[in-house]
Image (cartoon, rainbow, N blue to C red; front, side, top):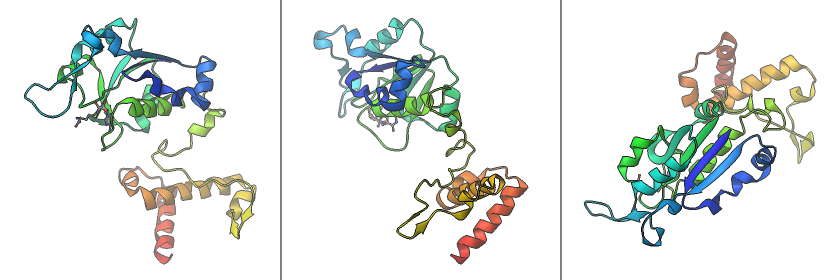
Length: 241
Ligand code: SAH
């Protein structure tokens, strides 16, 4: 996949060129093309912002440098703009985007964009109900969540299949050596070698984690008979605890 990023701060993008994603770049599993749209400003000192029409605090990003930077790309794929007003990003969107051949992200700064920029993008996306100083961290979060779902990026392709949100549930608890630490023991079933029992325990604990921490995810879920039975058990257990 090829990812284009339009930003005023290209130097911020080291985190997604490190570790697992960095290895993916080296292996040419994906490509990162960072464009500083300040270079497309035709104004003195290459400024890209101006005061808002109608008055008020802060500076607004001008449309022209962003449009010129977009036009300079040989191809764009889906164009995503980072904005608090956008649709909230989630795992399902990451899964869909991971199938694309190219994506282009636009990072805002200051008070945000001239409204007319939205006419040149496919989607406005937010990473949550809070305001950051710029679109760089949101863009990096979305690129990370998307790229790690591509084949060959994680060491084991199955690591992303069972994790939180991929089945509409949070992930079950995980343990590794030692089997006991300061009196805290790993659940016995995990060391039993009984794969069917382990699978059932994991499903139950994924349901429990979701019931306790994100009950909203269960509300719209089409539950199997087994899940319904496990959930009833969980509710009883949690009441007596
Ligand atoms: N004045 C704007 C906020 C501007 S913040 C408002 O009230 O909506 C500056 C830039 O940071 C935005 O243009 C956007 O690109 C980015 N940004 C800030 N918070 C964000 C969030 N939660 N999700 C995605 N992008 C965000």
